[in-house]
Amino acid sequence: MTATPTDSSCRCVALCMPKPADLRRVAKYIAFVYFTAMAIALTFPGITPFNTIRPFVLGVPFVFTWYVIWILGALLVLTLLHRAYSK
Image (tube, rainbow, N blue to C red; front, side):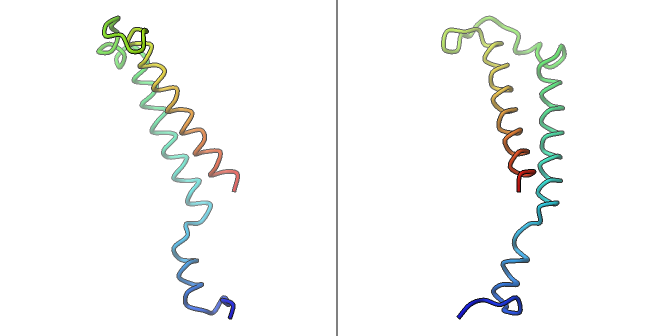
């Protein structure tokens, strides 16, 4: 027996799945918040507490590690945006 559009289980699945427009809106909001925080964290007022040579992380100064962490986070956010818009 196959599920028809009038079947209650089919309606439940349709109601539980977010619409692509909602996913895009959420992805855009997350990207906006992340890149705003990134701009603040990587420029003058935000970088000041982390602008130290020591401690070393994997042989590089901590400030370089700080930049790498934010850039890897940007990779994840851009991947999220790509998946939201490719569907």
